[in-house]
Length: 157
Image (cartoon, rainbow, N blue to C red; front, side):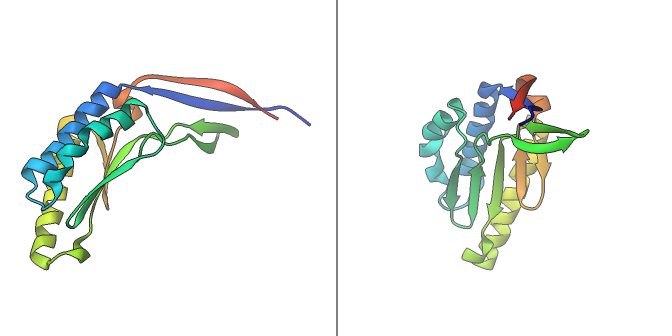
């Protein structure tokens, strides 16, 4: 049996910044989206912040009429082959905003899609989140939200 080596990326995030963005995102939906049910999300903020404080791998979802905002948690690193070597790359936490317009009337669907798009674009600009579409994905990039990124070697037996 030969011993091989893999590099492992370890990212320490600035949790206070992620919590600030989370509170702002949930509050913005609850107060300004005019989507029925999002006003209930304020009550879930404290549980949400506990999840982020613990940097758990499991995420959470907030659901209202026609929209879901899901936080990925802090996923396990994914194995990649780079430059002929194995690297376990840390995955970035993210929010995914999905409109479930098929569940509501067409007029509401348009309002939900516009609110989700407007909020996603605003958070991309203001909080420097990386963005992907569709659906609207707001990513806490390592470059912007990490306190420290460290690579270390691990033996693979």
